[in-house]
Amino acid sequence: MMQDMCILVVSCDKYADCWTPFSDCMRKFWPDCPYPVYLCTESGEPENGAVYSKVFHEPTQIWTARVRKACEKIKESHILVVLEDQWPSLPVSTATVQNILGLMQSQENIGIVYLDKEVHGMPLWQQNSHFYLLPPETPYRMSVVPAIWDRDFLLTAFHEDLSAWDFERVGSFEKSTYSKTVLVTVDRVFARVCETGAVMQGKWLRGVAAFAKENNLKIDFSKRETLSSKDLFLKDCKSFVYNLNPALIVKIQNWLYHHSQKK
Image 1 (tube, rainbow, N blue to C red):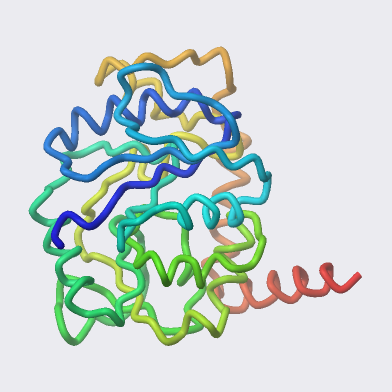
Image 2: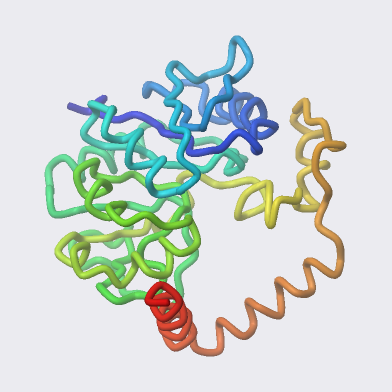
């Protein structure tokens, strides 16, 4: 039972340059990982010798549909879902992951445990102070950060065809997900490179080059640009506006999304 989990790296062919660095970081920062690692993309193949033991080819361009179709083929009861640019950057404790998995297996009401998610003002879970609790209607309660999902709950949460970003906003207010408990580890269990991942808006984050040099990662930086100062300034402005009133901002975004879908 303790091994009834896999790791699913969700990607697409245009992010193939992230697959080898993810594999190399897994070997360096989680060398004793006992779980099989699967890759989901449209048609590409990782290089020989990478950590991926299986590749799910799903040609659809719809993000949630690609994940859903891959997970329908997965037999493990729990799935650690991670994006291809969310390379581990600090050692991952197998014992800690196994403890979380054991908790989820013993309490079937737990739908998700996020392993590296920033939260503000959320209560500690009364049953275990090592976790925060995300109650229903919390903005970004459904998220694409590294997390262990109950497979059946994942299929419920991913039932609608959405982009990754729409899934985070719209899916967080999907009533079908309210019955399950959603937790966040107090400590970073699967710490990501550059705090959030290696790529933003299709461009490398500035810290990636130094991280790659430090860890001997083979990356062709000519294939995509690095975020400029202007890009980072605009990102910080958006974050400032969002943090003024996250719940209101997300509700407005969702209203605009649903309004556009009716046209």
